[in-house]
Length: 450
Image (cartoon, rainbow, N blue to C red; front, top):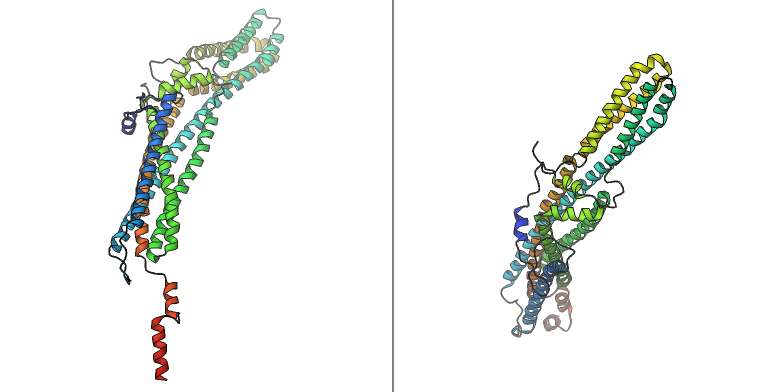
């Protein structure tokens, strides 16, 4: 049987892993995944700082543009009532920016869904691995208890009944020794018992973080969607109050977009470093956390023909001992039962216990094979290094498009504000004003006609 396929890093992993890294002193940092090292932490924080620099430059550009627009406009000629030309261009600039933002929202929803799918696959793999490890511990404990009970009750009773025949007592004691040997060998198969690292706890922690991450991104996506909808509404109704509210919201979402961009970029870079060579890092961390031997961890994480099963000797000895017990029970049933009819009941009970034990033993052999746990390991890596990484890249594109669209909107809204006509309330007030010259002239003409 060939070895199961290992993890193959994707093209995105190779591309991101090749990017240069530097610490706060701009010294080169190796791209090997080492989150416990200070230099590597600084390299990831520098990626976040680049997003902060982009935010600062965006705000400076917007502030300079608005100052120039407000303070350097040529004065309008007296009596000018028509808006200056260029209103259609400003409106279409806003609409184009908002359409780009809406396209970014769609990309963001897709990226958020891909990231959630990857994390869900990771959690499912961890839960399945926890189920396998728990099943191994449960089968071992149940089988050992069953054998101990058989030694204390049926075999003890059988020895007492066969005291008159020394050779039959020796056979019963031989079965006792074999049962005790099987129990001792099986106890060493529960390799995860007492280990402080639980895949279930890791899955719960991952799901907890993912839940809050998902809620945060959904909130950001909805905020940008509201900005797009209400800005279009404000332009359509030419409402200055809506424009003011949307300017404040656009500025808030712009800051959040750059912040999320920094976190996404740093996470994607760190994840690419991890996914480029995950086996060595996971082996080291798991060995430190669990204290298990490298032979056991290599067998389950690598699962190839070059690594032998560390439990093979125990399994072979247990299988031979069970076969010997079965042979001895058959001999007792053939020799002892005809002479001691009362021995039939414990012998049959022992045979039933042996059959159940052999069934549990075959289940243990299947569970202890590396195929199942290695499949969970591969599924977890695929969810983390393919779907999650791809989703992060789409979220990074969403944040970039959102930041560009919102910066454009923030620069276009003040010019659109200047092109809005006076509100209807002022126009109505001017028409009803008795001191309006036009109304006074009409009033004089009406008196003359009378």
